[in-house]
Amino acid sequence: MTTFISEAQSAALVDDELALEAAREAFLATGTTFPVVIGHSSSPHNRFTLKSGSAGDLAGVKIGSFWPDNTDLPRHSSTIVLLDPATGRLSAVVEAAAANAYRTAAADALAVSTLARADSRTLTVIGTGHQALHEVRAVSRVRPIDRVLVVGRRADAAREFAVAVTARTGLPAEPSDVQAAVAAADVLVTATTSRQPLFDASWIAPGTHVSAMGADGPGKQELPVALYDRASLFCDLPEQSRAIGEFQHAPTTPVALGAVLTGDAVGRTSPEEITVFDSSGFALQDLTLAAALLRRHSSGASE
Amino acid sequence: MTTFISEAQSAALVDDELALEAAREAFLATGTTFPVVIGHSSSPHNRFTLKSGSAGDLAGVKIGSFWPDNTDLPRHSSTIVLLDPATGRLSAVVEAAAANAYRTAAADALAVSTLARADSRTLTVIGTGHQALHEVRAVSRVRPIDRVLVVGRRADAAREFAVAVTARTGLPAEPSDVQAAVAAADVLVTATTSRQPLFDASWIAPGTHVSAMGADGPGKQELPVALYDRASLFCDLPEQSRAIGEFQHAPTTPVALGAVLTGDAVGRTSPEEITVFDSSGFALQDLTLAAALLRRHSSGASE
Image (cartoon, rainbow over the protein chains, first blue to last red):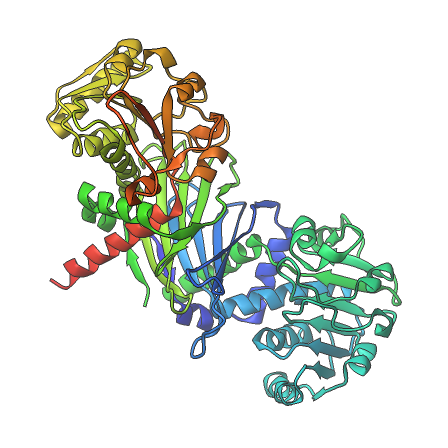
């Protein structure tokens, strides 16, 4: 019997706690991810991505789509398909466009809770899109953030975003000049589609944690390469990060966050250390998210 | 609104005519296919394959799975996911394990109807599995087949298969020695999981058409390389056939069957010519199959 969870259902089921637990499960899983496919519709600017993998009793694929011309609907959508591990048959289909934003932000929150200084209070976010708002909300749950600085290319977008941050999180938020905002950050999150560095490496203060959430394809770049000489590098999947993530521009192989979580690798070692986490996104995050949504769905259905 | 067609529904909707028309549409389509992913569950012998593509208003992916230990259920299953071309959102999910066998056999029937001699009467099939029976049924619809010769590794399996062929098609069918069966064939279909040639190239008579349906992964092989010196080579997707299909062992690039259908390439040019078609299977076959099932589903639902 196939379970189908619609977009409206998954959007109602998801929250930060569910997403964070699913992210933790994914980063701790011993599993396999398979090559990412980047496809497109007959209009080549409408792209879809296939991320597949397996771990434990989960096997399946996330179909992420990006239709840039969407106006009434979000431009990103997401469908997770799970196979029955016993038979290979279709087990579940979970539409998860809204949930996908929680899933991506949860990886950031997991990185911040693992790598950022415990006393991180100033959160700077570069990017004013839908995902950036999710990042602020998820990160502010895991550190005592008391101020949000917002950097956007357009002043009005940054102002609107700051208002939205305060409305959503209750935190004071203000647009800021990029240099000042980067220098003041305890935690710096980039969530853009940039193809060139967003700031100068010299602006980053000792002890900052940086989460680069945007780079997910060849040629994308948010961070200055000069930062890598001063920082310890972490990511979700080292191979993928080197291939399509931020660290395609890095000279050394980053450490997997999962290895830090299990104690097999060292995370932050001093309050002055600069830590950088790159999220390129991997299939096990999608599989564990779908499984968590299915569990919550069935427990709700049986109440 | 997502349409979901279950395995039971698609199995009831599919027939040879629908599958053949979907195959023709796929082979004639101007579309794009993306790299094939070969994944597995946590038990690595349970494999799944992702074939994705787009053409016209179709975009999506077929998830094919092969769970060799299945006993009550078929070992192969298949789920086709279509995206809405206007929005990128999930449009339809079609379970299609039974239909997938029709789809694969339809490609064979299309090749035979395009490349085999019009007076082909003896059909030889090497392989006695589920798919082989579909091949016999589909091919016998497009040529005046009046005799089926069956070659299997096990004599009892070949006998049982011959009985099943007659029950299913009404055609006389008999187990045969491989050399005699290959020599007698007007149309020779191989549908095995072999990793080495199934017969000697010198046994093939002039004028034979050969459809190699089994090779779908690195290392698989059904045909003797010596055959290629004497034969004209055709396939579904030349690049894929050279990479994972039968023609990974061929010295020259085969001709796309679609180009023969459109008249952009030449098919059989004489009654003595030996033609060889390799089917490795491509995503557009799955997308057009799903679309055809959806059309039939909605026309049935509206009756």
